[in-house]
Length: 324
Length: 154
Image (cartoon, rainbow over all chains, first blue to last red):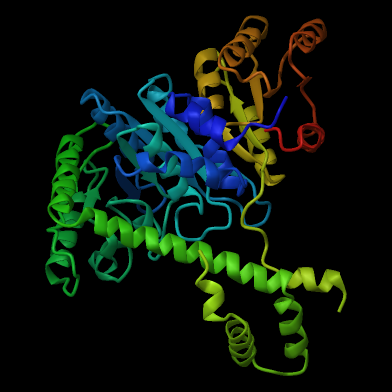
């Protein structure tokens, strides 16, 4: 068997081969060197899909809600890609990926593609490869991409970098109104969902959230964040949520969505550059060993980092960068 | 400065291949404690384990294997329907160009059926009383063999 090439997989992806879609996501997850060239070949097809993130604490009902949203989108003849992220163990590196259990009625639908992702070393609620996986699904031609984060606490919101629309899913019984006013998760919400709206305390949570949104200020975007009551288990309120998602999408379209996406892509370039440059300096150019030696001599961490970065930058001449 | 010491200061690699395995419960058998115990043990040995829940058809299991791009499919069955369901999972996988997947499983399966299934594309079946460590070790050994044989052909 000859090695599958990047070009071969891009070709298969464009022909609608689900195996190629799955394998390219694996390449992204594993840092396979074929991923970059393969994505390059289809990158002109990226940017058509609507990307919606679903985040919230564990047990809030994200998987069930994503399943209901997917069902409704399918009834509307839209194709759906789901990326369901679950946590990796910090000890073994393993993960139990169980979000599909709530989505099994979508399992054989050819208009739906579901991929479970382990968060691996990422701490921000999604995996390092989640945005790449979105791009692959987008190039494949799935119209709606739903990203489900790991169950998050108050300060994991990397989903913002992956989604155009962020839905924060909460449920009653998990804290009072002051929780809702804290910085963090609520601030990244474009839409707030009170799930399990049939439980007692749901009305109170909804009014606390509405109140918290009223006193919030200083956010650049002025999208009027709706609070939507949903019972994902029964499907109640899902159509209202879909309407809110569409409203947010239209709101984005009236503004400069390409510019917003460009900013996010710019951050990806920067993050990739940070990691490539810093790992090259650290291992290949021996900065790690040098830093260790300097620490042993009693120098302070900040001083060492400052000196090493100054040396690295001094050795790069602007002429070198002006090639090509 | 020893090289080992230098390595210890390097960041752990963010990427790299992990074994991905699907644990499936085909058919109407409603007992999944064994499947869950095996799934947890494989997670604890560093694998990424997709568990799909009870009552899956062979088609569903094969389709999930495609979407999740798993290396291994492990089936659990206690109802006695293994001789009809296990080969159907295999043929659904083959139909989807997934013949490279390592097929394994376990449950209440008589010795002669084990022999027949191991002739028919199942790499290994585990019976009652198997230690979970042995399952994990077998999978790791099998995948190490395959990955070194295929090199970069995946």
